[in-house]
Length: 140
Ligand SMILES: [Zn+2]
Image (cartoon, rainbow, N blue to C red; front, side):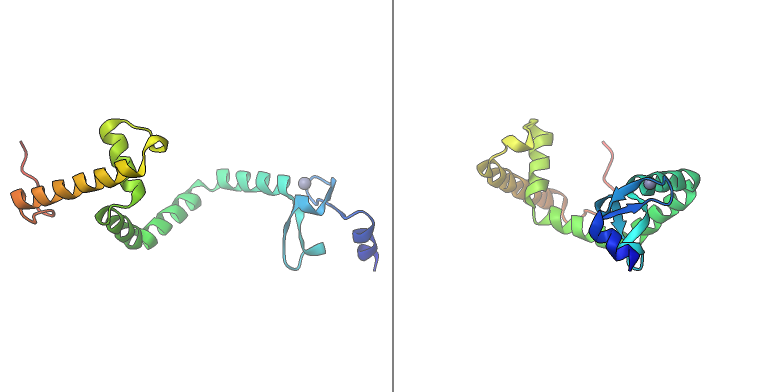
């Protein structure tokens, strides 16, 4: 009964790490926690994470590698499709690389035009070199 009163009274909770009484919004939600909140405040929570990350760099690295390995095919497939279909941000990147125009200054007309240019270049390359994308390019 006491904690419900406390909840109604001031809506604050004491952090088990720094010991400060803080409002509920300063604690992350946690199912099963007192008031449905984490026992320590957000500040202490992130400090704890930073400390843990610093002490376990290998775990972080492994996790990242695992994620990349797991999603590699999907990621590759996605970007391949994007390049093939000439998605807007891909074309914008090409315009930026070619003409140095900032993405914010690129108009729809420029995108449509560049898309046509890329298509023509691709068709031309295919005519010249055939469909030999995967074979090693001859060194000039
Ligand atoms: Zn705290």
